[in-house]
Length: 453
Image 1 (tube, rainbow, N blue to C red):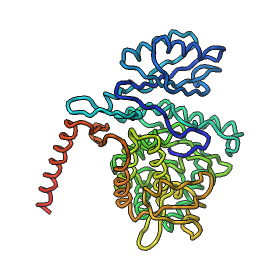
Image 2 (cartoon, one colour):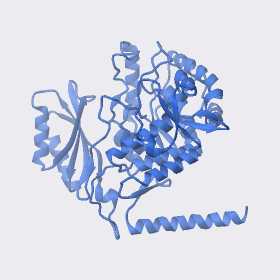
Image 3 (cartoon, rainbow, N blue to C red):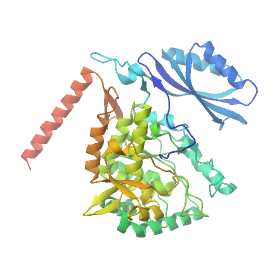
Image 4 (tube, rainbow, N blue to C red):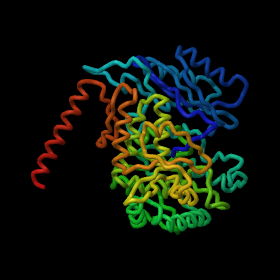
């Protein structure tokens, strides 16, 4: 789930060099005078540099705090030494390594590899690395702003916490959490589903309209049932290789986009407050399952989404901001041409009654989707968009995006390996030659197939 938060920093400054090991440690401490100082003293004793620290009220230590600390260390042995030093601090609870990946391991090594002089932010190399994002969210699902419709409803808040806890505990390879939705939650879904379903034939793109009935047939989509993400994920994987995974709340743009490289979409499972079913200040399961999910079953859109994700791996903070803007004006608020008319394909439109209708009036400005210009467009996050970008097709948008991505300053290229659900970094002669052999084999298969057509 990607949504801009104007009150929180947008990116992680977690760059590593070729000579360093970037590691994120998680630990909880009891609230007492000097607690953090003792932990920092442990880091100093291990002789490592701390590059980032984040804190939030603890989910583990009563009346305590959880900390995420990025450190630079040269060896795995040194990382283990740091962990042991922190464990010796009596007030510390639940010490663990959230992520650990050496730049030499992640970006090269081996014969013919090219060294990187500039810093490259850490990025996931395999799908299980996405587990490191589980607790690193900008906002958690049970934390509601004062103007949220459910902010003063203790029952609603407890329910959100129950659902968020399941997302927090989920790890790759496990069954996706099953939510037994209440009748009240189903009634909220029913109102949203019924009203949007009536609007789609007039406003939604043909790819969306093709997939939605398939979701109704295969994943129990309908007005009287909130579908389970396990069923949806299985369906998407059969269609395009995309899968879902639960998320506690808002991810950073970097983490969210990185996940798309693996054809993984982070989805919330909680639903908006029943007092106002036609309004939500944040993405919920209505937005995710009705707005986003259908098009992840379309091969051309899936390719577009993954292209944004692949470009985000190891990208600079500046480029992450540009890619997040592209995602905003495509997957969230995109329009497309279709048989001489304009249709909606962005999830922010397809899950919003008011803006879906508004976006296709003559009131807002419509511009041609050109990534180099789109990234310069500013936009509001709490009101209807004044500007929308129109794509000729998903294929055309993907082709333009690839041309734009080629202008980025990232000093290497990556490719996704669907067999291992991992990312190959093409920064050495050996790797490029292996990739070339793979392409050659595919071309031979293509030539043989053409002979039989």
